[in-house]
Amino acid sequence: MFNKLLIANRGEIALRIVRACQELGVRSVAVYSDADAQAPHVREADEAVHIGPAPSSESYLKGDRIVEVAKQVAAEATHPGYGFLSEREWFARLVRDSGLVFIGPPAEAIARMGSKIAARQLVIAAGVPVVPGTTEPLRDAAEAAEVAERFGYPVLLKAAAGGGGKGMRVVREARELASSLDAARREALNAFGDDAVYVEKYIEGPRHVEIQVLADQHGTVLSLGERECSVQRRHQKMIEEAPSVAVSPDLRRRMGETAVAAARAAGYVNAGTCEFLLDKNGEFYFLEMNTRLQVEHPVTEFVTGIDIVQWQIRIAAGERLPFPADMTPRGWAIECRITSEDPANGFLPSTGRIEYLHVPSGPGVRWDGGVAAGTTVGLSYDPMLAKLIVWGATRDDAVARMHRALTELTIVGVETSREFHLRVMEDADFRRGDIEIQWLERRLPELIGASPDAARVRAAAIAAALLADRDRHARRGNPASAPGTDATPGGGRGAMDPWIIAARRDGVR
Image 1 (spheres, rainbow, N blue to C red):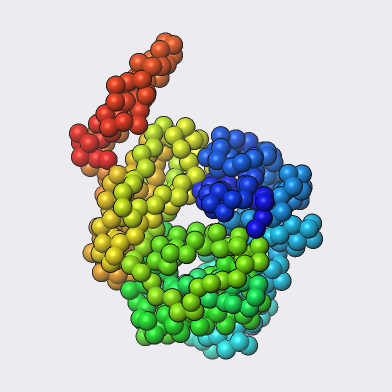
Image 2: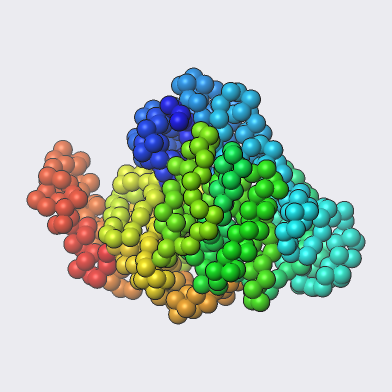
């Protein structure tokens, strides 16, 4: 096992890795930008090193600087988390060539799966089913029109180096094709530095189901089962769960075998995810492989009992996987991404200072957060503040538990997606599991259209008044008498905290 590990990331995933290191007896080193000097992951790590200004291009994306810091602090390995440098083949190679261990797949595997076109070619050769489409970038609009006519409309234009919906366009009619191709190419070039676009048949109303795989250095490749990721907005996942209501034990086995075959074809080692479309007839098609840890990995951890982040580190240190090949999920897990966005205002980013944070707890509730009271939320990074994850014996139990946990969650200072998630948990379609990747786009106006009820408005006003009162006391030099401080009888984190009293009086937590 390593003695020291550098974490090349920030926020909740950096804190998640810090905790895994603590349990493994590995010293952790955090890196941070100007904006993150007081962040929880910085406070909790054994060491922390400043790497630059707030913009990620000047800090968390500076691979050479991160490797330089790792060598300065005598770290033996670096964990990239997800996002930033996690799927950059050149960074994995740089880490390896510097004599350090990259906690993730080999650079060659990242390169093989980094291009959707190259990945399609690779898995087709391995007998993996893919959505019908091209295996080479489109040359021009004339070729795109020829392919589209062959497959039949609608078709989907996709950036070869893409992800997260960038460089992606659904084309339903021939007259839209040329302009959509130009737009997809421009967006792909801006997002990924590569304007290569290919086309595939657009499948109406599929589910997005992915398979988590783990592979060690000794030839063992395992499927840990599926995750349902169909609740999406603009191709961004909002809610994830494991297992999926649409996957039978036989289908789980077949999809798992397919994911393992794709991973083997890529020469894959460590944690990765194969993403599939699952149509209404139970047929599934390979989309891509994410060569990193996924945001939604906690739901798989809940239903398998396997700590995926710890096993990323163990695999990188040379350990063998001890788990059986046949994984049966235990119970049900759901994850909501809590973001600093205003759903009622088109999900616009919300910035400000988190003045108060009350985190849900209780049986089967997990909070993977990267913020605390006092954290300033800006525009430099992804708006995800935390992930709220719950486990229940059945899906109904998990939905009820998530609803309860969301009602306990209180964040004052920025707008968040909490209210949106509550409404999804109350939605009849969602409760039945009657979802697919277009479901949220259709239902969104109803889920975000209603204004907050009077009780929530009043609770917010009370909270704002309490905050102003506390600030007045602080300016007078008597912070101990301010409402909500630990010096107040029962104040601060106690049961008589006036923030909580104000909310509960109006039926809000």
